[in-house]
Structure formats: structure tokens, C-alpha cells
Length: 137
Image 1 (cartoon, helix red, strand yellow):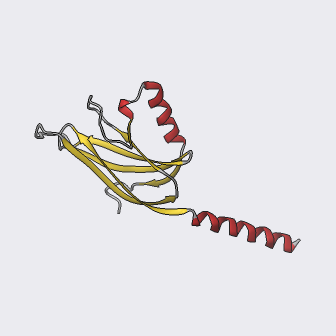
Image 2 (tube, rainbow, N blue to C red; image 1 turned 90 degrees about the horizontal axis):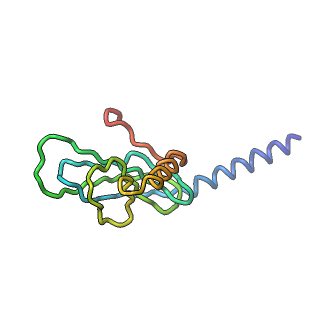
Image 3 (cartoon, rainbow, N blue to C red; image 1 turned 120 degrees about the horizontal axis):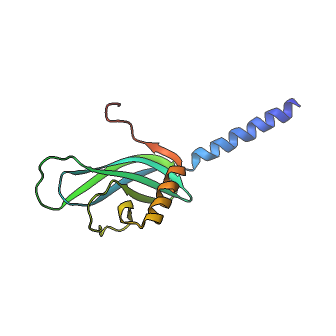
């Protein structure tokens, strides 16, 4: 009986050690055009959705007066997570023109059914990383 318990604990420990080996350091970086330079992007969270890592990028205008020129929002983070392909998903886009950047999904540009499905898939995904609020360090 004791040997069985020890063997089970050893197998469980070995299995959990194998999970840690699947982690990879991802240097996440995203940039895209915005209507003016007042827009800022931030990587809010990363979730494992299917066989991909979905990176939630929140974009918002700082408000106030801004020059009437096209701007660029950028965000970066380093995250430890499973060794999976990365997909960037932008939440909070408010401008009407379609962005030309490839490899980035702008929820605002998707048809309603696809947008709802993407939001649900993201919400149901396994949390890998969540940014700390700015007042926490």
C-alpha cells in the first residue's frame, strides 16, 4: 500500500515537472495605426484558447486635444506561457476605418456573430498572464 502511494506521488510529481518544461518566455510586441497620437495600447492579459495564446490588447484615447495626424499605438510585455502560436486581439477600437496590419484581430471590425464568438472564446480561455493595475508594482 505504501509503495503504491509513493509511486503515485512520484508519477504526479514527474507529470507536474513536465508541465513546467512546456513554458516559454514570449516577448510580446504589437503596434497599429490609430486616428491620432492620443491613443495608447496596453497588453491586459493572455489566455490559452485552443492551441493558441490570445493576447488581449486594450486601446483607448487619453482624451483631450490631440494633433489631427495618424498615430501609432504600441504595447510590449514579456510573458511565460505554453509554447504556442500567438494571436493579438484588440479590444476598445472606436474608429471606423479598417486597420491594414496583419496578424492582429480588431474585434470592432468583425461581424457581430464572429465578435461575440471571439469574446466568448477569450473569456473561456485559460488565464496565462494578467497585467497588474498601474498602482500595484
